[in-house]
Image (tube, rainbow, N blue to C red):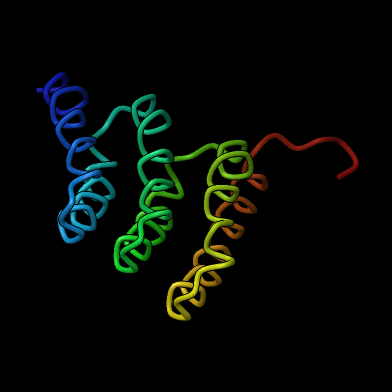
Length: 130
């Protein structure tokens, strides 16, 4: 069942992310966020950020918000380097979003990700004198 979840299902979901129906794209993003706990860590790193970044560029506002929500819900799945190098740059497109709701939600999510990153750095190895 691991192979089915990590390969076959993800391939099918990749196809539904580019579906012409905006509701299907939105629900695909939500489902990926919920499945993240069941996926292998390596799969999470390879699949989730690109999938959610695609959702953040979707013309349908609810798909963009679903992408932000999914990034926030899966923030603990990423290493701090991935947060700084992939997640936050992918989210930066939301800074120029025309929808006020999406822009406000971006502010909430970015604060949450910064908090997660701060907690991860505190739990890491300590350097003498810091």
